[in-house]
Image 1 (cartoon, helix red, strand yellow):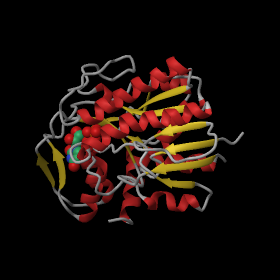
Image 2 (cartoon, rainbow, N blue to C red):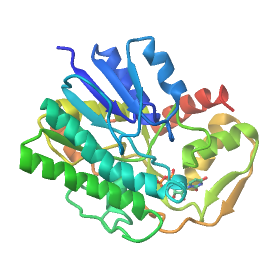
Image 3 (cartoon, helix red, strand yellow):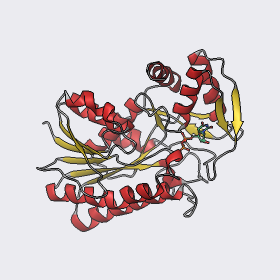
Image 4 (cartoon, rainbow, N blue to C red):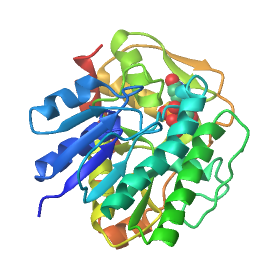
Length: 310
Ligand code: UDP
């Protein structure tokens, strides 16, 4: 049966892919976004397919009407490059924003999915990271605005479940990449791909031995929907466990784009986690979902999309 679903942050990178997938399966979608890091261009083609777009900051109010079957909260700037300039906005949307959206869900008796993050694990002392690991976060560092906001979001979501019996889902999203990333958002895939296509040096931070595990966005949103539709509260890691160093990623980007850009080493940002890989046992056993796009294939598709952008 089609559902009516509110997607907060639906004009953002993951949000826009989520809205597209929901429309594809026949759901009615209302997207709310303040376009701080999202883009009207991401949702404009979806309005022609029936999506309703509401421009608003969910940290202030959520001006939507009618009942919802589900509320999916993907609203938050997520690039480490934003953690300084948008520090207060991240804390606002991660606290008041989550609370306002939980209230919308409560008014409808809707299911609520909160997008949390692998950043709750901080600089992980356990590798790969299972959901049972409580993390190692610097509570006052430059990344804390994001990490602690997301940890607070998990706590608030669980408190609503305990107090009001709200049906909630917690997803811990690992590094995600693909079409519709902002070319200048400062994250590693968008940086490397735009640099390679422009013939500029690829900026590897530190010595490039730090690792990430990259999930193609179409796999990611399918995983998030599998969690929403499941009977599992979570938290559940949603990502791909194909781990590579940032130097390997730079080399793969050069190879797939055919670029002859040099690699340049820059200072490593403070508190940059040195390794990250999801333990996906829970996702595969409870959700019956796994990422199916190898990094090489997803990166090639991403490069093809960025060619039209830069
Ligand atoms: N990084 C890099 N060059 C860049 C951007 C990022 O080497 O131009 C590194 C960064 O230091 C980190 C990894 O790539 O170790 C992933 O960074 P990103 O900002 O994409 O996300 P994070 O996983 O840190 O949230």
